[in-house]
Length: 252
Image (cartoon, rainbow, N blue to C red; front, side, top):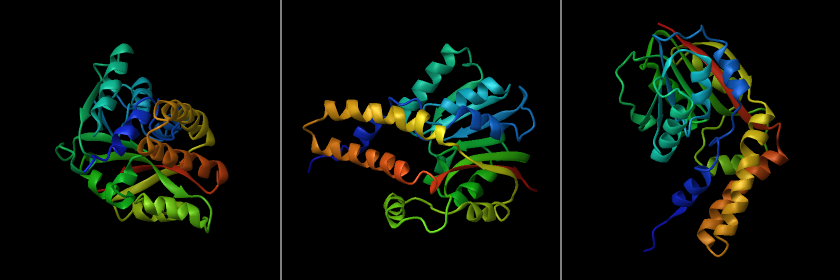
């Protein structure tokens, strides 16, 4: 039986992107501003960091030591190389690992940060699982998919259900915070620039190049179709769904 190369093709596309999902430096810093200033004795864990666009932003905006974890080694290699080039290599440690089984002792970090990745575990499960990693009074910051309007169209439900997504609206996310052992400090919606200019524009360019390179490969082209479908749905329903930052403090 032929090997399914879908993930190989997926990573061929995404390794070329500056971000592996929607994001925006201003939004990262806006969330960071809801926390006390981080000094050089404090540590931050970036979970599902990808190639580390937000990791670099956090390192440049704070004095904290950062551990950045992703399960795809080439993303970690990209982050480590960029951090070294920027003179941040002494404060950023890249580590290959699984967010479902993070190998750190309880109370290791002052802040746990995760942009656009907690969906892999599910929002409530991620909050519960990562709480042990925080020191007393530590902070958890995540950005997560949310419905922004009632009654989203069925074709949106279908694509996120097919992908195994943990779907919910903002109020549902907020209601999960206190039972998981946190106090919500604030939340806000990622602006459109985080989707278009920072993610979908470069993704569209990569897809065009990818299609040309694999124009006779139906399996590769099917991966491109899935990526394009996501772009098309956001273009069609830009106010219906998005990412929301949630900034939380661990309660004792």
